[in-house]
Image 1 (cartoon, rainbow, N blue to C red):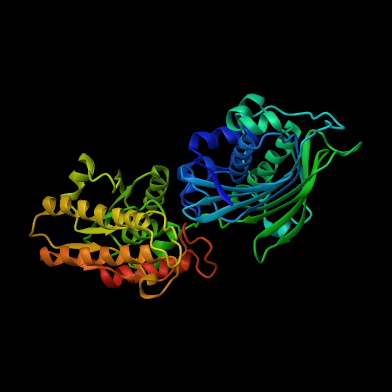
Image 2 (cartoon, one colour; image 1 turned 135 degrees about the vertical axis):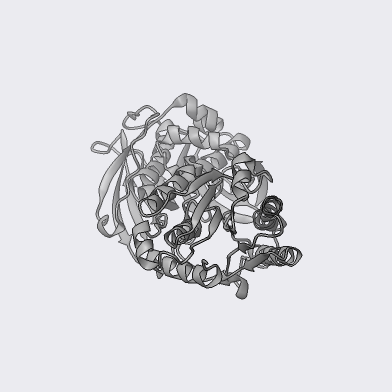
Length: 480
């Protein structure tokens, strides 16, 4: 295969594709919602990448009048803005296309096509593109066996031409609208809100009376709860085939404040004035609740998820004093006036800021990934500690808490960059403590607990996470 082109898909392109296809799943459109998924970023629609690949192929190989077959395997999701390399190989009326990101295959696409198109037996009836989508459905895999429904064939010729000028001018709109309807099914209906597109196989036919010319119908033939996998048959007047998709884990819920209060002595952390950096969800959320339940005065920060941070603060306020909520982006190097004022009064810094824990390729060092981890774990920490040291001076007893993972004690393939960055962060923190005698350090290595990034962990729930966090904090940062 040879490199055919390189491209990216931006957030704006994803928004236009959502309008064209009707797939408004927040995983593709809402960065704050997407960060609470196991992916941590907004992803491109898989079908958006597929059609872009076909469009670029047609730009260099004109003469295709209609598709006869399409098969796609979605092997790895692609983040918006990533550099995508299109590889291609083709012969008479066939082509194999692949989308690669950073050397990894993300999509494998096979198309077969005809140089003539006799036109449809039934003229298609399209619905217009929509600006106000319905809410994503979220069916339960245990009850969706046999589910049958349909997605409208929507089409906007102008929008299609903007996104896919060659495909929209050469391929029949009825075929493209049918392909687009598959992502509407997966992203909006089944599996819907918590979905991952896996495989698509379509054969383009021309059916007669009784077939739908305005919708793509689907029926769930396989619903395997062991693997969260569904296989659906799809058909209309122009196509028949199948879709394979997976139900992805839902964002992790943590213990409610009432449960946290019931599990802790009210004075476990009395006297602490705690700053928690990155406490709007996950372990930061749990630690904020544990500390507040034990009598600490809590200030928590967020970088993007203000609503999440306010939700945590509101839950804490049902049982204890409402925490102060401040914005702080650890990558900026600046702390802002409000946080600068808060630093003068704190006694404990809990540093929980983290990027998405992206996995590298086993046996292949990714310097860019390592550098990104270091920006959060070392550069952001160093900037905050320098501001804090100046604000509190060298007399007040101070405490720094930077948790790591048991990953650092093992040989976990694909996480070399994360492990190296975390080791470097621990080394930096130890040197800071040695240079500042009024500071103490706690750097525990926590077991794998259920958070948004590890939401697929089946043997850990909110209660276990609470128990582990409460025990660690009482052992390393008690009150008094």
